[in-house]
Length: 167
Image (cartoon, rainbow, N blue to C red; front, side):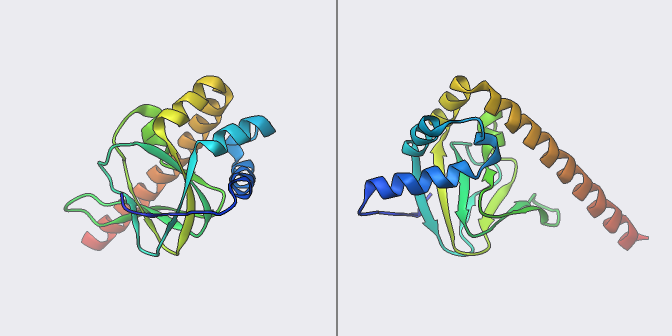
């Protein structure tokens, strides 16, 4: 993936900024200040332009992302089928965790809809965090279940629309 990685002049300010972003992500609520700082030190920051493909369906799940600024669209784009918008995500939201958590390929594609600033956590660092803080796994599974229900409902709506068009 080619992206612009942010070069900051003040590493302490950069770390503080990452900590503040991570603090706003619900799944990391149980991490104290030292845990947030450890996690922040494992993150790389990226700035991406509008319409940038963060990852594609079928890619290796090598990282988890947290949106600091901007918006992304999560889409299902299967050959021979209409593109399906699964979600729009904004600042403070996490994505890409499902593939890393379950060690599977990306199940959807993610594309920026505005210029974005995001944090990238490599899968090895993220999995180490989950080993150290099992309560985060529980929160992620809950988030995954909610997203799965939402995606299933959207797929059902799309199927109904297609059937209505055919009748």
